[in-house]
Length: 281
Image (cartoon, rainbow, N blue to C red; front, top):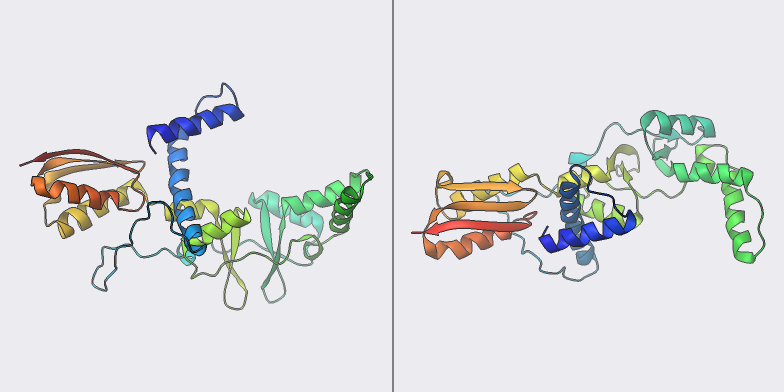
């Protein structure tokens, strides 16, 4: 994240809560989210048939290229087994399940373990609100209240849930799952097999961690793929550090190689900025 971007984020945060200082680790969290949102935006633009701003050309992955990172899939980051409730689960038991598992929503499954919907805290609150709501005049308000009362009459997961559920397959790419979660404003997505049976669940934090590689992996790619393989140089002759996606590289190298070396590092996914301290010889 550049200094300008960080100042802008901080100004917006302070508008929401005037006088509130950064919490410990807040800058790191902001950097992480910007890198994550950038990956989601790239996927969204591709789905819309547009090119994202300043796209990075994908590096061809050859069969013998073992150092190139594979496209992460949902199956690699999902949690198993997934907590679920049968359709006949009563209201109070759903409340207990969400509380016990520290969840905001849970998939609802039928007798064949197929996902038929998702019941969330919002669905449960709708029932609670319907029981104490006071009728208001006006056609729009009456329509909203009618829907609320319909939800409020539910007593089981099948009658309280939101259906159909938004799900992903184990083979879905993490980027596509992140795009779907962002578009649907969901924190968790049920993962289903080809018969719609629940096999796991993937959360937004799982997707963040998978999309945004940690600094150690970025440094390893710079030293192994770029310095050693692409430029046939000795990684021990360089000092490479990465902090929150910001790369610092120093060492002595042929001056004619410096521009291309820096360009190759900048093109790595999740690299936010490159600080260069190279000496030409």
